[in-house]
Amino acid sequence: MVGEPILHRSLRPVESYDADLAALVDDMFASMYEADGVGLAANQIGVDLRVFVYDCPDGDDVHQKGVVCNPTVVLPEGPDRHLDDGDEGCLSVPGPHAPLARPDRATCHGFDVDGNPVTVEGTGLLARCLQHETDHLNGKLYIDRLSTRARKKVLREMEEIRAEVEANAQADAEQPL
Ligand code: NI
Image (cartoon, rainbow, N blue to C red; front, side, top):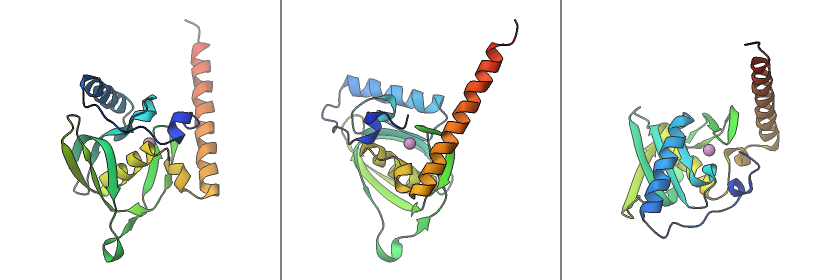
């Protein structure tokens, strides 16, 4: 959750493509599906390693799935650069969404779980996902890219939703058996 120090600092590069890494990646996919997310970075489950997983529709609504270790993102420049001003949200800032303009295409270079080079070409939501997850590994949340005002609004909405969920849980607990 937002506020945890590991979400707000740059992570260590992956150096060993071993069984521990494979087990971490399995955990990350399970956590992502459990939370109904389209992407998850290692620090979102408390692990200090530059790795993210994704299972996300691209611009043609085709689901792309994979893992990227030590990613770098290349964004279009000049006339090829077009912004998508759609909404963004994050499992570590649960509840609200906010509009955030990002380039509508992104190329992500890195390595798969076995250490083989991979390149992922992202369009549509996948372009946003590749940028969002790589940001996570650099200690940056999407709310850090919003205006001060928009960021405060997102955090306030998150707290309000949380208070509501807790109040409902309390009410449920008070139901007689
Ligand atoms: Ni996120």
